[in-house]
Image 1 (tube, rainbow, N blue to C red):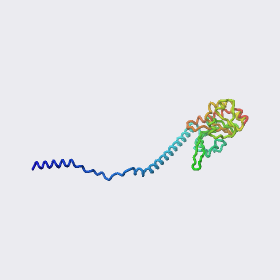
Image 2: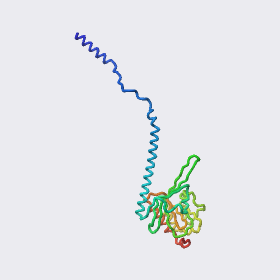
Image 3: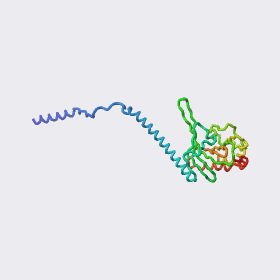
Image 4: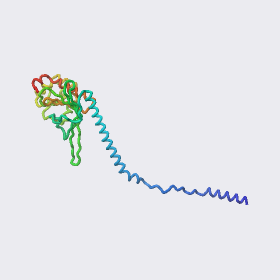
Length: 262
């Protein structure tokens, strides 16, 4: 009996080893495909667009605040006064640059007496609108400018490189005026209502100074003011713009003051 019992137990063990294990139940099968992601995709795209929009707004705000702080700091260092907006009605001045485009504005105005001359420096921008009948877009043009007084009653005159006048879309309708210096004629374009006034103002000394210092700037004289316009700059470069403006007035020939008194 003991032998038979042992053989029976061995047979049962071998039978259990050959029998397949029962499957493990992991719960209901997972749904096929990516229907969960597909249903959430519009929301995720909208959320991403909103986040990008607010990021752009935030970065633009931060850039404006840094620029404002830079001008405030420069005004303090130079003993000048800062205003975030145009407190002088500068857009009412009869400069052709202020008549460009479909809209325009002035901000970050720094003004006061600097190195024995009264200066007003500022950011200036204008835009042109373009429409295809369905949508409207804008192209912006940005400058940093300074206005300084000149003790003369000046005829309207503009001096600038050809690309400067291209940006201004040809503000004046009369022809470019030529001078004795070929280098000057190749670099600058001069447009004036009175050729004699242009010749009196732009003598050899003025031409030499403009070639050395005035490249990259545009100059416009109307009445007893000079507008100096250049590309948009960092606030730390404000002294360079003011220096060019002051240098222009210093190189106005004395004959201009005697022939065209203010």
